[in-house]
Each structure stands twice: as structure tokens, then as C-alpha cells.
Amino acid sequence: MARFTFSNALFFLVVISAFAVLASGQGGEMAPAPTPTMDKGSAVNLPVAGALLGCSVVFSMLGLLKH
Image (tube, rainbow, N blue to C red; front, side, top):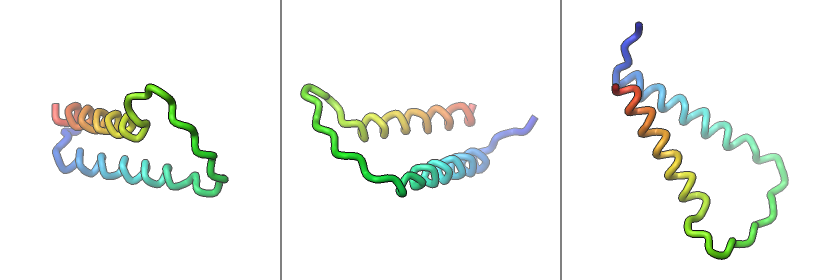
């Protein structure tokens, strides 16, 4: 069974990040959607929630690879 080292985990994280950046850049050919109106009473914007979810996934992956 292969042993994960910190350099392997870092390489894995960089590769996954590169794929995520490439996938997010693919949707540029479509027409832009109209801007949505703000929901009344919404506590957190969507980018903040996405960033928190992304950080949670990254730290979970690092924790699993470090264990």
C-alpha cells in the first residue's frame, strides 16, 4: 500500500485545484445571465458560503491524507 507524504498530498491538491480552475473557465461562451435581485433577509452572500464550503473540503482532504 502506498504511503502518502506531504509532498504527494500537496501535489494532489494542486492538481485538483488546476482542474477546478479549468472547469470554471469553460463556461465563458454562454450569454451572461441577468443579475438576480437580492433576497430580503439573506444572511450570507453565495460567494462567502462557497468559500467556506471550499475551505472545509480542503481541510478535510488534508486531514484525511495526513491521518
